Length: 357
Image 1 (cartoon, rainbow, N blue to C red):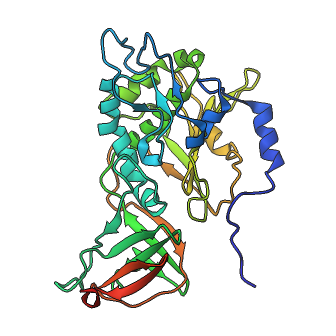
Image 2 (cartoon, rainbow, N blue to C red):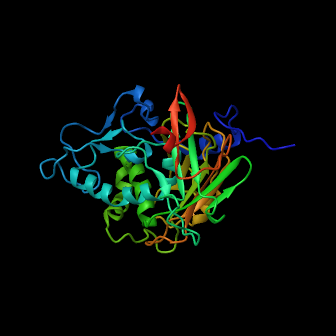
């Protein structure tokens, strides 16, 4: 008997995990005191956190008398699909710096997931087309070894893959394909900083003094590890199905004052096919990584298929590092570069380009 993967909204939540968080953590309030802003849904309006007058940048500490606040500063990067939650806590200079550095690292690191899940970023939906090192490549080969195009009417992707591609990059079965894409050059610590920056942005004002050195570290262009002898870890879960989550959602947990021996501040971000979980560094924190690794992953209302952990403690990316994602398909057709997918009466079909002239 085969094993069926559950997809969609989970009906029964784990009561033990819920109780763990109730006993040890408080769910930190949103900066605008509105629980709706946890879910980045267009129907909830376009909330802007922070005062509209007498603005002060949460990162560089400068006021609007010293710097401008004319650009739209997004609480979470547009690359994750955030088009609505904006911030008055970020000046134009910091906004541009983040966009050119750590948020760019974040976008590169998660590009495969963003493109497969068709998450619309600042420049639209990232393309999932790339070449793979191949000894059999000729002039007759297609431009890319892998092309993923999305059919919005049928709500599913069409995938074209060269059958000569090495199995370490593409694995085909009778009804599924696993794509392993090399990640473009990025800074792992930059990726982690981008996640911490999101958490700092949604923190209530009263929590910020505890993270003054962390904020300085986020702005430091050297990208050194915040800790001396501790790793920067991000735990994750993969959510099966196509964009089941619909909209990004976040939670920030603060350890109760009566609890010790556990991470102080935890951040959970869920969107697309991902749920990310990270411990937010804190000034003078000397707790070991084991504290964070032992904390149960927060309950999310979706079925998950895979759980893992990324170590983002290095300045330079590993050239051999790849992200992988498995997709199921209805059928497989052998084709050439002369074939394209066209839409007709709301349906997709495969045609020869030469026949369309």
